[in-house]
Each structure stands twice: as C-alpha cells, then as structure tokens.
Image (cartoon, one colour):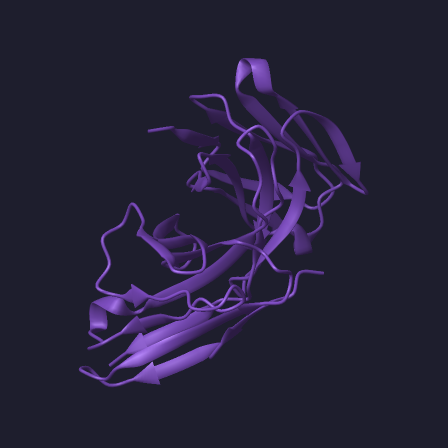
Length: 107
Length: 116
C-alpha cells in the first residue's frame, strides 16, 4: 500500500523561529491535507492541498504532486503552535496518515 | 467549521462492559471513518463506510463493530471492553467524490476511553 513518511519526527524550537515540515508519499494521490493536533487531541484542518501553494497567516503549504512531497512552513513560531502535525493522503477513498511531526515551541 | 460530533468526549468504564461511541455529522457526507490513536502517536484506521449499509474493516484489527443505518450516524460498539481498548477514538467524514477529485476530511473532537 501507499507509504506516507513525515520528517522530522520531533522538532524543538525557540519561540520566533521558522520551521519546515515534510511529507513524502509513495504513490499518486487525489487529496493531501495537513492537520494540527492540539494537546487536547483535537485534529484541526490546516490545509487541503493536493497541489500548489496556499498560505494562511503564518502558515503556508506547498505540494509538488509530480515529485510526491508536501511541505508545511511555520513562520515566527508561537508556543500555541506546539503539538503534532500530521499529513494525510487519500487513495481509493482510504485516508492514510503519516506518523506525525511532534513540534515543541519553547517560550 | 465542521459539523461532526462525538459523544461521549471522556468515558471511564469497567472491564467487560459494553460501550457505544457515537459519531454524527450534519454535512450529508457519504464517507465516514473511525481511527484509534494513543496520545501523540499515529492514527490507525479501524473502520470505514462509503454510505448507508456499507462498512469495512480498516488496517488495524479491532474488536469493535460499527453500523451505518443512516447517512449522518456511524456508531462504534465494543461488546466487552478491556484495558487494552484504552485509547482515543476519532471519527471523521468526507463527501463522496470521484477518485480524480479530492475532498476535505473533517474530524470530530474525539472520544477518550479508559477501561479499568
């Protein structure tokens, strides 16, 4: 089946720093989304981005579908950005998640 | 905002009890999913449904069962809970679409289950 790999697995940054999270996938997909899971376990939609680039405030994402990867950029990190970031791809109506990147923003 | 709801949010029950976790969505989505997740770890698909009367097992073997009698409702049942079932259970939904088009996935807030 399709493999979804996220890197790095863990990231610790000082408040104000920028970060780039990566998601590689092994097959063509119809849909790719980025989620942020907060400390209470809730998954928040960040971007639906099967291709191209989108921006929302300090966050932006780029997916290069032909090369099978997506990047999530976080600029000027805040402590509230801490949590786990997941990418998920859809193939044949199944949603497959990566293992996540655990981001810790230090005050 | 997504209109997908899970109840209960938190539940502590004794071993051997039967429990049902409820999931409802008001968006008319055909596709619904249940995931199991230990805190901070990866999500494992345990059940999914493409529509009414359609249910399939996911990639992770689970002792739970599901039903899809109505489009908006996708409950998950454990007939006899065990401590190994302690986890967070996340419900998700997405609209139907062709395989050449993508659709946004929406998650409920999750149900935290502790079996003692």
